Structure formats: C-alpha cells, structure tokens
Image (cartoon, rainbow, N blue to C red; front, side, top):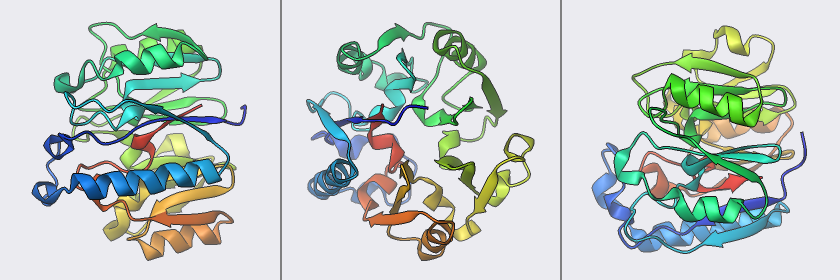
Length: 252
C-alpha cells in the first residue's frame, strides 16, 4: 500500500450550523470555533507530511466540510460517491474535478448509495458498512471500479461504520465492544475502547501517528500503549455534527 501524500479538505461553510445531526448539542455549534479547529486539524496533517489541497467553501451545503463522504480512493482510482443523504448530493462536483488531476475517477450511479464514512481501508481489502447511507449496490460498484476485495458489515441502524471501527495500520483496528467479536476482525489486533468513550474511534491514522479527540483519555492511552504516537485535538464543533477526524479529509 503506497504511503499517502495529500489531504483534500474544505473549511466549514457559513451555513455549517445546519449540518445533518441528531446530537443533543447541535444547536450550540459555533462556526467560528469550527473553523479554528479545522485550521489546527489541517496544520496537524501538514506537520505529519501531507500536502493540503483546499477546496473553496460551499455555503449551499452545510455538511460540505465532511469531504470524506464524497469519494473513496484506493491506489490510483477514486469512486465519486452518490450520497445516501440527498441534501448533500452536489457537494462532490468539485471534489471529482480535483481528484481527476491525480487519479482515474468514476461516479457511483443509481440505485447505488455510498458514502466514504462507511469504508474502512485495510492493506488487502476494504470493509464497507451497509447502513443508513450505503447500500449493497454502492458496495458492489465500489468493488468493481476499485478492483479490490470488499467485505460488508450490515447494520441499518447506524449512519456510518467508521464511527465503530478504524484501521490504524500494523494489523491493528480500534473498535467498540459492539464489534469486538466480529468475524471480519478476528485476525487483527483489536484496541477496544471503553463504552463511554466509543466516540474516540473517530480518529485518524497517518503512519505511526494517530490523531484523536482530546476528550477521551482512556482511549488515548490504549492507543499510545499499543505503540502509536497520539496527537490530540479539540474537535467539539465537529462532534456536535456527529462527525470527527476522518470525515474532514480525503487522504491519498
């Protein structure tokens, strides 16, 4: 698996407070604070060696900073997604234009729905959630175009699978108790976070470093003890939109 060198990002829009979210603190979203947190996030990725490619703000799309959902990249190809959340369709247009400069690109087409937040990247395969946002048609189109083995985990009650498991490299997956016995994970080293810190799974691995929310000291220590450098950030304004670290970039 080639080492990623770029991160595609987009700042939160002026309308960010209208993001799709059922979080109890959604009404307290602060756009100015979200942009400050986003800036620190981009600075961290840059310090970890990634070239930051910034797309223009899209005020017509409150969720448009969550670029991860717009595309799935594997090796030298990208699948431009057809999002399950209809209000978000259209965000992907300039993402596609940008990725075309670097990768072979194809669009998912109806009846497929697929979002990047459902796709976990392992060295030899992808694990795709069949969820509220991604269906089997989406998983199949992704498998065909990206020419990679795709395992699926079906749970129609969740928004995105990546909120429950995340590959950290070195045959290691961070996950919750809910998936700790899942057969697809049986040959991996599992870092199981405490139930009350389940949200900490929304972390981002770059090489031997893992960028995590600063709110979860136990989970942070579990990852640190497993041999990773842990970098913590305040992600409060993204957690209020039920999103976090991977959601904010397409890394390739």
